[in-house]
Amino acid sequence: MPKNKILSINKLVKAASSLKRKNRRVVFTNGCFDILHAGHISYLEKAKNAGDALIVAVNSDSSVKSIKGKKRPINSLKDRMEILSSLESVDYVCAFSQTTPLSLIKQIKPDVLVKGKDWKTKDIVGADFVKSYGGKILTITLKKGRSTTSLIRKIVSLYK
View 1 (cartoon, rainbow, N blue to C red):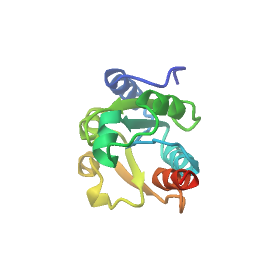
View 2: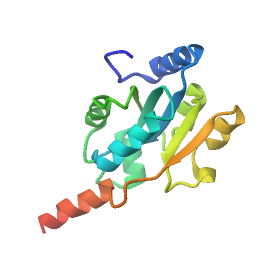
View 3: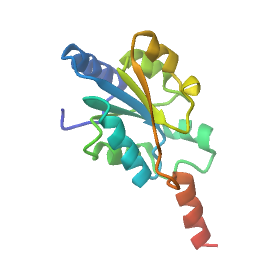
């Protein structure tokens, strides 16, 4: 894997194609990953175990704001991507600015699409597309009580 794991979408699509030509299983997940915590680490390690290369697509700052509200994200896109790229379980990181990663999923055509078990398969963006060519959908059990929102609430309560 390359030293620099943070790629543009174009370079990421090329890297995924190259991996697939070598019969390597490409795993894809996405999210805000605003304040990285133990739940994220566990989730990403389990996602990585589903294939050979894990791609993590990160919502842009504007995308996070549209999903989570105007006070988020806490960490900038650059920082979130840098932190994710430092993890051993993560092979590639890219940013996307749409509300959903559907366009990116269609370009990458991952072998495995991963989300948390808090998602129903029918509601996972790109699931139907991935299943249409024989790809798999994997939902991972999340660590109970671990979320960025709960961390933010805890921090805020310390300063009230």
